[in-house]
Image 1 (cartoon, rainbow, N blue to C red):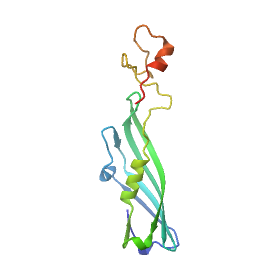
Image 2 (cartoon, rainbow, N blue to C red):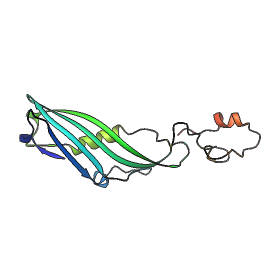
Image 3 (cartoon, rainbow, N blue to C red):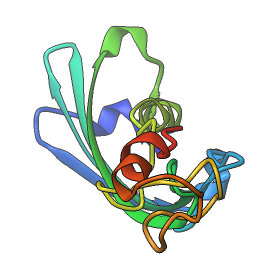
Image 4 (cartoon, rainbow, N blue to C red):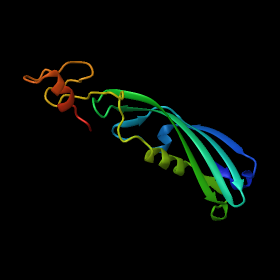
Amino acid sequence: MRVALEQINDRELEIHESLPASSWDMDSDDIKFVDDITLHCKFFRIAKEIMVEATVGTRMAALCSRCLAPVSKDMQQRFQFNYDSTQLGEYLEMDSAIREEILLNFPLKVLCKKECRGLCPGCGINLNSGECTCKGKTKRSLTTEHRIDI
């Protein structure tokens, strides 16, 4: 998103934009952004300061950090930026700042559900959908001792 500084004044300027997630190169081996990134930004100026309120929405696909099940989640994030207009050129470029905030605020663990039980390290079964087949273990010990937190 590129905005001419002359357009930003004391009245709020709103800009909506949608772009392919692939254009920001945010995918990794275990996380894919599957829909367009929607940006809704509000710009306004107070003296020499330019304030930006950005709302970003997208959908991502990943694997659960505990049980490796596919997970698809809508993401909605809000960010605020402040800029000194005397240190900017003719335009304010927002893409790299917003991309960086998305990546910095991404959850460290993606879970299929809050109470995900994970995989049994002994037999490998997904404890959310089946019972462990390890010999000699009680049901209680499987839920506490066998869960893998990655």
